[in-house]
Every structure is written in structure tokens, then in C-alpha cells.
Length: 514
Ligand code: NAD
Image 1 (cartoon, protein in one colour):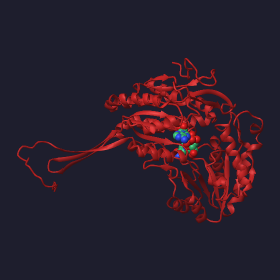
Image 2 (cartoon, rainbow, N blue to C red):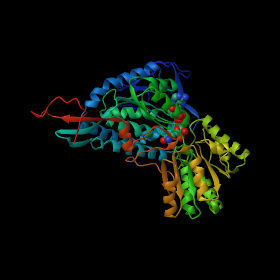
Image 3 (tube, rainbow, N blue to C red):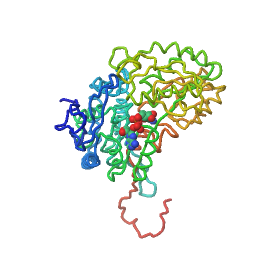
Image 4 (cartoon, helix red, strand yellow):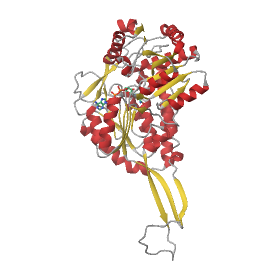
């Protein structure tokens, strides 16, 4: 079975020679018919690698129709059969981990080791979903009144959709679709148009695993596809991960159309380092968490809050580590940090170095001095470090989403906590200290959804759920794990009584159950 994107029979795009990434509808690859497509680059070389078809509203409708048709059969498929299929999906993803990772490196730019890690974290979510028979167990109350039992069951919603960002092209879809289909829903995925190939590849693996036609569909595209998803009357729920303005838009538009929505947004994650912290450990953690995946992680540390006199030794320890980071194309052996996703994004990230400096920050390390930034064709930017950043600066107020670490100096623990709690984003945060009492107090005080104690990127394992607070999440339920199961099902409560001759009578009163 060939799993690479095939060019359509006729190419309507501006670049006729480019290979196309198609949609996946009703169990097969479907070439776009809208006449619209977008570029997909290899960020390491800057070359146009392929084009991705952009769905029209009608193409979205076709995917929804397939998903709607598949729903009754899939919903009625026994739990044991669904579990068997989920195990096969899990095994195929594990077997093809390297191929999925190769798609990620080619289109996102992340280095191979990081791409393999992304697949592993996605795989965890598929493993969680294989426990669906246990997860869907309801509850039962016997004899709530004489001869009457009450029980609750959880049932799927119907057709549900996922809209995903560029920075985790495989893991974030796996956050969503494993649980969604395990619960008996059928699924429409609208991946990022910047790196769509992994999604279509996953669709092929799902088909090979025995997922029936129409249960899992991929529509590629832009706002046209997203807007059709948000307004489509046959889509019951939307999971979204992306930037805050779009998350807010998805939440407002989707809920207005009567859908259940969970919309995860952007981030500005702070790492608070207390004076008693292990400096070497804190420096290792800050560097790994700020520059891993070129800072394009929603849980990346972008601000280090150095409390009191820890700042100078901490910055020295960080600075020592920076020249050793190997910035290179993601498929090069030993590469630790790859390029950014697009040239525009790279330039926007770099612009914060000038704005930070002009607003009073110290540009301690300038990533634009890296040879791959100066001379390369790809979208590289070396690692950058801004010290003496303050909350009024643009580089602090915005999510940079690139390899830029900012240091804010705080006088005390209280000042540091206030800074973090005043920030409108609240995805992840971490404290570095040897003091258990201080760490416990931080966990109590901080208004952030995911907290690390000497752990810089506290992404929950798949049997917890993932989600920030404030502008980092719109909706009530976090993603994946137990809250994912809750999101993709609705409760039905049954009150049951069986004929018991002689006990039945007309009674117009409100039931007296005692
Ligand atoms: P994005 O918001 O630009 O795009 C996300 C999705 O929305 C894509 O599928 C895209 O096609 C679609 N989209 C973009 N603009 C749209 C519009 N105007 N109308 C309708 N749909 C639109 O995000 P991105 O740049 O792909 O991803 C990076 C962002 O995602 C960062 O802000 C990052 O923090 C965030 N993110 C958050 C989490 C989290 O869990 N909170 C995880 C990963 C990424």
C-alpha cells in the first residue's frame, strides 16, 4: 500500500508540478475539487514541497455526510470490536512511528528525535483509548424507590470534528480522534494546512486497522473549511487547538451554533526560579524547554522569572549551554533544533528581538547571528536570550512561539507569582526550588492549568487531561484523558420499573419516593 500523497489527475494550482496532499473521505483519498490549494514548505530548505487541497463547503459537506452515514453502524459496533480496532491502530502507529516522524520533520521541521517523541505522546493517547470498555462503564443505583432502579449510561454525540495546529501535526489529532471514535463517534479532522501529510498518513493507517469507511475523515483547508464545520448542523462537537484569537472565535461561533466546543489557545509559560534552586538543573530545564522544537510548543517555557540573586548565576549557566545547541535540518544526525514553520513566522519571531531591545531589554544572545539564519535558504533562527524583560514590553505581552527565552527579574516569590497570575495566558508553569513548602504553596497560589514542580514542561500523561486556564482554554472540559471521554459522550439517565402486579394505580401527585 502506497501511503504517500498522490497528485490529483488534474492540477488546478499555480504550480502544476507540485505533489498534492488530498482529503480523506469515506475511506479513500479524494482529490480536491475546489480549485484552491495552499503551499506546504520544507522549512529546512525553504522549498515548496507540495501543495495541499483546500476544501470548499461542499467538500466538507461530503465528509460530514460520510461520517453521518457511518455513525449508526459504528455506534452499534460492540465495545470489544471497537477495542480490537483501537489496539490495531495503536500497533500500526507504533510500527510506523518512523514514517510518521519523517512526515513531521519534512513539513514541520522538528528534529527527528523530537518528532519520534511527538508520536510517542500521541501513542499514549491511543493506548488510553483502548481502555474504552472500562471508561464507558456507567453507574447504577438499585432500589431508589420501591421496585425502581436508576442508572446512567454515556452515549456518543454523533459526528464530531477536530481542528488542529501546525506545531503537533500528529500528536494533537491523536489527542482527539482516539477517544472520539472509541466512544462511538465518527470524526472529521481539519489539520493545519502548513503540515497536513501526517494526518492523511494516519487516516491510511486507521483504514488498514479496520476502521470502517466514513468513521474517520480528513478535510484539508483553511477558514472556508473551518467555518463550514462550525456551522454544519450535523456536527455535534468541535475540539480545537491553536492560537488564542482563533480559539475564541471557534468557541463563540461553535457554541452559538449549538455545538459542544473545547478550544485550547495560546500560551506564555513562566518558569519561576527561587534562590535556593539547583542552578544546573534549572538551567538545563530552561534551555531544554525554551528551545526544544524551536520554541514552537504550547508548553514551551518562554519566560524565566529569576527571583532575587539567582538571576546572574542562572543566566551565566544558561549562556554557557547555548553555543552547544546544534541547530540544523531535522533529519541531520545530532540535530537538536530545527527551523521555524514559515519564513513569515521566523521573521515575526526575530522582530521581537529588536522590539525588546528598543523597549529596554538586554539582547544577550541574538539568534540572527547563526549562519543558517544569515546564509541558509531555510527558515532557521538561532537561539536568542533577552534579559531584563518587563511586563509592558511587546515581547512579553505577546506569545512569540519561537526560540527566544526571556528573563524577568523579580524581587520575591510574591512578585513572581503576581506576575504569572496577571498574565492573560495560563497554560503551563513551573517552579524550581529545593523547598517543598514553597513548591506546595506555588501549586496552591498559581492560577494556571498545568503546573510543574522542578519539571519545566508538565504535559499530563494520557490518563489525566490537558488544559490551561484563562485565555489558554475556552470551554469547560480539558482535552484527552477522562475529560476527553466526558467531552465525546453525553449522559443518559434511565429510571426503570418493571410490572409488579397489584402495585400499579393512578396517582396525579408528584412522586413521593420515600
Ligand atoms: P492557528 O490558530 O493559526 O491555527 C490553528 C487551526 O485553525 C489551523 O487548523 C488553521 O487552519 C485554523 N485557522 C487559522 N486561522 C483561522 C481563521 N481565521 N479562521 C478559522 N480557522 C483558522 O494556530 P497555529 O499557528 O497552527 O498553531 C500555533 C498556536 O497554537 C500557538 O498559539 C500555540 O500556543 C497554540 N497551541 C496551543 C496548544 C494548547 O494545547 N493550548 C497546543 C498546541 C498549540
